[in-house]
Length: 338
View 1 (cartoon, rainbow, N blue to C red):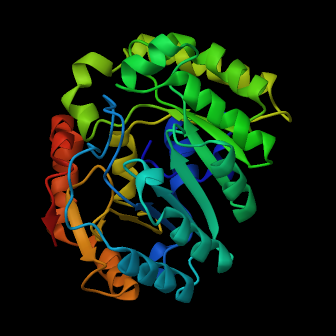
View 2 (view 1 turned 90 degrees about the vertical axis):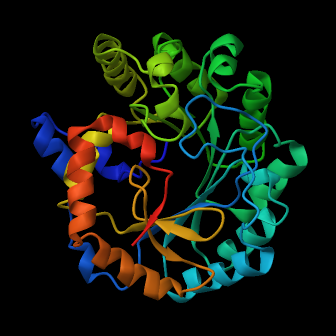
View 3 (view 1 turned 135 degrees about the vertical axis):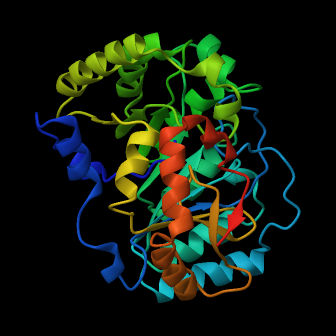
């Protein structure tokens, strides 16, 4: 999905107004005080077997300058040295990366909490066993429909049955398994059914929220974006299902779109970094700014760059421009180094 929310806070939201709710999610201690990020989202590779209409990173294209295995492991060492407590690995499709398990094993050997985000199509019994041995925080499977037709309409070349089978294999081997669902015009009506399916499979948590208008999603916005009326019904069903499965399965949903989040990130930047496959570090997914390069700089240097970048006038002015003109979100992958 691309938005990193504080999940425990999400589950405790009250009936406060929208602005108060969003502040409760995003604000906290001043991130400038932290010696290192609290969270790192790492897009390990760009290769992908699918062509999803909503892909934030336009995965599947060639990125010839991706970090090598040695560079990736050096990055892992720096993550451990700075005591970063939590990270998530995605792609592309991370299981297409030949050194994905080398990275995962290193991270877990250092006792860093780890989530893997995957389409699930390469998870068989052997892979499920390997994940089980790593004792990760979770494996998150993308499942975008209660039926093959809806899932595969959004995830071009996708296989709904393989994603469901991946959930079953992971759960069979005791892996903490989650499902993430991206709502669009043609699958949003299945939200109740997909949550029921998730519960029947035995997953730990179900995640969803408004679709991010960046990357390939921005290009296909007229085709995939639900209406406000559809979203209203969507969140109504989510509230019902959250109550229905309370104490049985976690249902997390982020009720704000990327523009609403950007408004608050200007005031409350998150203590997190987004690293793309070639080692470049983005300020935040919806903006084009690059604040560092893991091939040329240390993680500690990049963290200081990140903190300083949010004070720069060019970042503040461009972010305000994006908020006023959401179509500019389509430029999020046209990188600008600052």
